[in-house]
Amino acid sequence: MKVLVATEKPFASTAVNGIRKEIEGAGHELVLLEKYTDVQQLLDAVKDADAMIVRSDKVTPAVLDAAKQLKIVVRAGAGYDSIDTAYAKTKGVVVENTPGQNSNAVAELVFGLLVYAVRNFFNGKSGTELMGKKLGILAFGNVGRNVARVAKGFGMDVYAYDAFCPANVIEEAGVHSIADQVELFKTCDVISLHIPATPETKGSINYALVNQMKKGGILINTARKEVINEPELLKLLSDRDDLKFVTDIKPDADAEFCKFEGRYFSTPKKMGAQTAEANNNAGIAAAKQINAFFKDGCTKFQVNK
Ligand code: 3PG
Image (cartoon, rainbow, N blue to C red; front, side):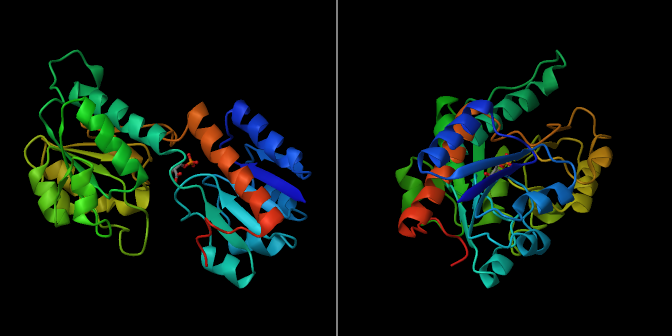
C-alpha cells in the first residue's frame, strides 16, 4: 500500500524516521510531501495513495475526489475540522485522529504564553505571578487536563467547564467544576480555550462572554481561531484597556489586534504541537493506526462512523 505523508507544516525529522520505520516495517511504501505551497501538489500526490497522514492540511472534496485509491486518512493530532469528514464518508474513506498524542505540548505552550503575558511581554516593567490566580479551562479534554496538571505546579486555583464531561471527572482531577460557561469567565483571572471548532462553538467567544472577566483578565487561545468572534473581541479590547489576548492561532484580523500593543500577542505560526515529542507521538500513532487498519480492518479511532 502507498502511504502519503502530506504536511504543509512538516513533522520533526525524528518523527518522519519513526513513521517510515513503522510503515516500511509493515511492508508498505512511504511517500513524503512536505512544505507544499500549492494545493495542486497535494492533488497530484494523493492520486495513487491508499492512505494519508496529515496535520492541519485541508482535506477537501477536491482532494478526496483526486484520491481515487484512498481508503484511510489519519489526522496526526486532535482536531479534524480541516477534513471534510462527511464527504469522506460518502466516498467510503475512513477518517481517524490520534487523540491525546500532542496534548502535553499544547499545554506547555499555554504556560509559555501565560508567563509572557503576565510579565508584560518581557518589557521590563513589573508584572504579576501566577500563584494563587484563578485559571478557567474551557473544555476538559486531553489538552485541558494537561493544562490543569501544569497549573497546579504553578500554584494556580484551577476551574473548568465542559458541556460533555461529568462534574465528578473534573472534581476527581482536583479541579473545581463550574456548571456554566459564563460563570467560568466571571470567576477566573485567566481563561484558556480548549474547545474544538464546531457549528456550536464557532464565534462563541464573543463580547458578552469575555466581558464577564474581571479587571486584568487574560484570554488564551491554543484551540482554533474560528471559536473567536474577532470583530466583537476587537471591540471589547478597545472598550476595556485592562484585558489581554494571547493566541497560538493568528486571527484573520491580526493587523487590527496588533494595534493593542502590550495587550495582544500571537505566535507567528501555530506551534502548540510543534515539539519533537508531540510529532513523534502523533506521527507514529498515525502510522500504527494505518498499519492496524490494513492488517485487521481496525477503525478504533474513526471519527466519521
Ligand atoms: C491538533 O489539533 O492536534 C493541534 O491543533 C495541532 O495541530 P498541528 O498538527 O497543525 O500543529
